[in-house]
Image (cartoon, rainbow, N blue to C red):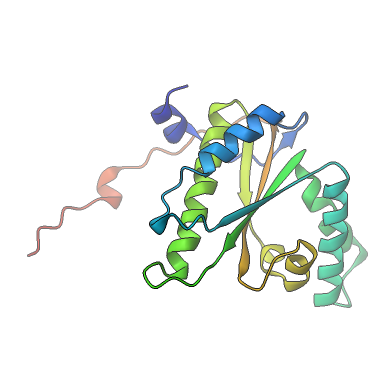
Length: 187
């Protein structure tokens, strides 16, 4: 698949099944992520791969975080939190490792990680895999961050779910350039 087709046809896939990506595919995904624009070559990213029993363990962490936030949480909601990481055979946690730099503010470092995530999603599509980038309250929870071993200067920017497509792919909407692109000439 050529690059422009992968970029313009990629869609998020919420229904994923096994098998997960093989080791060669995972390496290709990370190589794509590492090519993200990165002001001052700071490499402000870190990734965790989670599969198999790790997904169940993360579900337990999500449930603990939910209970910590709301001691009155229902059993149904706790079970939903436990199942969340198991939506796909592989999850990659994308982490921004924010560093102090005179010329590169934190927002640019976060954007570099986000660009890497987008590269990863596009590469997954080109490899015939399904993927979706999710955040939600667990991405911003201190208990979850602690369980994942994040340092004080790190933030979860997303949970990337990867596997094989288990549904009909949505068609990307046709967007008109005129709705989003205007010429500016300084007047």
